[in-house]
Image 1 (tube, helix red, strand yellow):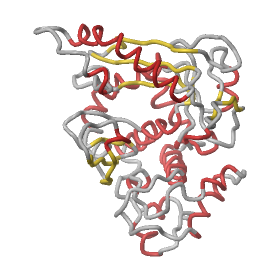
Image 2 (cartoon, one colour; image 1 turned 30 degrees about the vertical axis):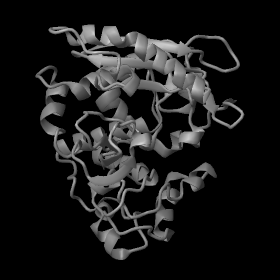
Image 3 (spheres, one colour; image 1 turned 90 degrees about the horizontal axis):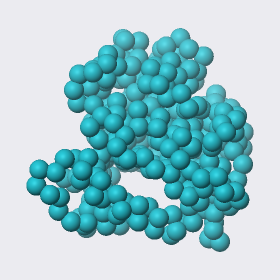
Image 4 (spheres, one colour; image 1 turned 180 degrees about the horizontal axis):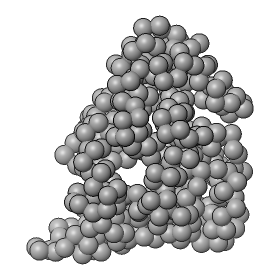
Length: 347
């Protein structure tokens, strides 16, 4: 979905692991606080960001760093539209794309915690429309498999049918005709329709009309993410929103938002948000001490299955930004984690 989503990227750094150029800025002073260390790196961060924007012809982006349970650095770069001059700031609404999948995984975990379903439940028992070409895989496919990107399906299986306007039920049924590309649970392969089905499982467990209703009730509203939404209409209606752009060899061009994609794909990529709102989400994810009921619950309940690596995959150092020549990464509940000593969560 990357080439169809806005290149105006709302970026949130979930830890203080920075690009190589920024890390090379020099050693920190003895006894220097974390926030002070970040402060000394800001010129390098700004320069690195500006260089990336120029290299990929990105009109604008917003960047945030969360540390010590607060947004310690938030800044907008560039403009909201290549055809206009309105500046980006920390309340500019962007499509966050597949970062949405982490929210979907959390709503599933909430339903598990409430005993509405189990990670090991067979998907076909929860949704009889689900069927893959291999009957054995259909029977053995569990809830956690919906998120782990190791279904055996080829990458982006049948996504194009969504772009052509097929509705959710037809997209889910279409998987039964797809030839497997690998053995079940053996190989990383990025898929989106499995997440569409996961959203339907969440909604059924919660007794809600759809997964987005669960998202709003369980996460967006409790966290105070008031500027976040999940429809094309909502992002268009936001006075301060970044336009959609698409990269081409000749440079980025502005493209209109469409409800078909990503919004009709639901929890695979439909959230619109801001740096200020996403900082609230990152604070929740990073919290390691008792706080509100929601934070304490997430710390206790989601630390194992949701963060655990489910699928190993090999990535090139040039692709990952890691310094090792051959790095092994893994995917667990739709969040990639590089296999080095550096702590990082990304998508």
